[in-house]
Image 1: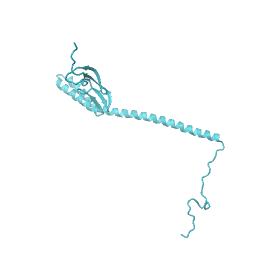
Image 2: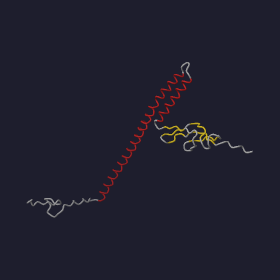
Image 3: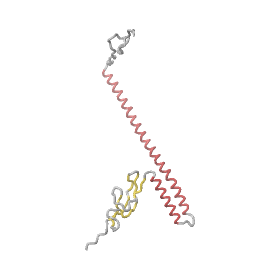
Image 4: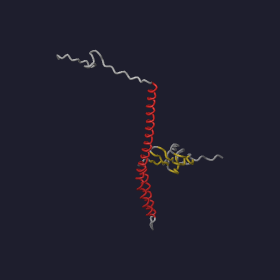
Amino acid sequence: MGSSENTNPTTSPETPAGATAQPAPAAVPADPLAAAKQEAAANYDRYVRSVADLENFRRRTVREKDELRSFAIGRVLEDIIPVLDNLALGLTAARQPGADLKTLTGGVDMVLAQLKAALAGHGLKEINPAGQAFDPHQHEAISHQPDAKVPEEHVLHVVRTGFSLNGRLLRPASVVVSSGPAKPAAS
């Protein structure tokens, strides 16, 4: 505490008291044209590297997207392979002498249910709108037919079921739409 050391943080033992350290002035190039060319070359080099990086990124994302698609398809096929096995067993049973049609039909129904369950596990939803109101976003009307029991603009018959995948329509259901009760013929 009896020390007389300088405690000013802006000064050092080499700088006199009261003087502050200043940065050295930037070196001004002797030839401004050479400096501009050097800067342009550096900018061009950064541009070329950025273009190359972007192209590498594009290629990598395409490759990753293809790998992801292949992996997703592989998962679907793993779930469908048992269905193929059961279909083969059903065909073998159908070719046996004295095959029972009722048993074969029941087996085919079970295989169909197994296939639907496997596809539903991957987001496939069946659109079977029998008796529902006609929805042009989900259904394709192939004809109108009068019917006293089914209200007008409701699905009378489903000709072909539709399918959606995770909410996206893959195929609309082909339907016959009721036009309501038959109108009396005008005389």
